Length: 516
Image (cartoon, rainbow, N blue to C red; front, side, top):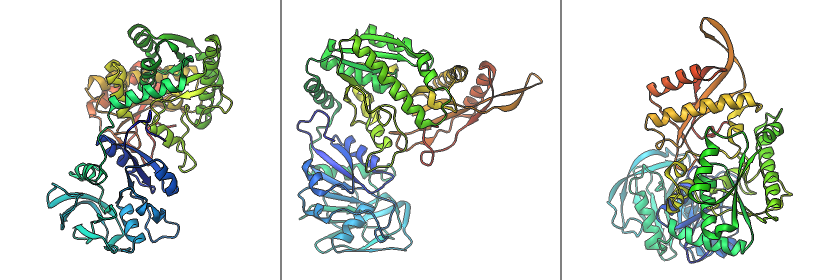
């Protein structure tokens, strides 16, 4: 996956050994204005080097280097020409493969730990001798390989950091990518700038410039259509393509009947009036709801919605004299979660794993390599209004995957009304920008309640609110009690068909942010 638009930009490969924090490492590298991408540990070293990486970072991982079948990497990577930094499991792998010793079954270290720098090192340049770091390991490096020197230690880890400057191979037992390692980002910058010589050229302005060039090269003078959903991803993708090809672009807003309250009006106002983009509004609610009739499996929902979207776009394209290109707001986490041959599928995103095999479009995906925070920055640079750029993420399949069970017109109206109350109250409390997502879920079961001294048999609504940096991991939000009280009272009193409100207090993992 090349850097968007190609051109002169340094690339760092993050080799994933199944780490909880592999995505976070990639994000931290990008925060240092260096482009990064995640690759599987099974990738051949020749294929890695074909991407001409400025550096390679080996992630942590849940396994022990001693267990049968533990993930590994071809040791040729250490002499391939790019500097290498191993983190946690990655550092242990460096030690084991190059002749050091890794002991298992010790006490390990977990959480905040005091570290002491015991030698001069490019990694710790201008950092204090004593600092707090975040540890999470059972095995420990007990002896550095020949040619390496130990440059930091803790009470339980005599080799907390090691390096061989001649080969430009480094390792740290702790996690510099997490916020609890307070000087961790500085250490990563020391590696990126001081060791690897990376240039801080990955900025959103440069992303826009490269993307515009790449889009023009891809589409030439052909017509392009873009599916607008009302969410930030498709909006930014549309604005970026419009900047590249201007009146070659036609945006298509498909009213699926699965949208939030006021969605259609906001999309029309932004793109038809503010950006003066040619916008086709297709009212297809009956078509989507009919296609979903009787379907309860979430994967089938996503695939049905994805295929129906494509068929609608194909019909519009024929009216536009067969537009060849379809713009989508696919993001990097979409690619990861939908699964590849090297990664398990968590769920199919309707614009990735849900696309039909026989579609007649060539995809234009200018955001494919970006995380959500980067997309928002691109949107601001392009002049999109704040209410679009900072809208909380909304799933492409819309409310269909927030109804656990069959999608019906009645359930959609109930959920739409409840969701609007959640948004209004979260904004009223000043929490909207603090939360990654906050929304309502309708569980298609009925429970007994009492309203006005009479028995009711109605739906429960679940409130889901989370904090996150990139949706790869998330924590449930501790909403104030008065906010929860208002949410419960308003939903039950104002939304017919609901007699119970619950709160989801599950983090990701083990849950996902969306229920389906």
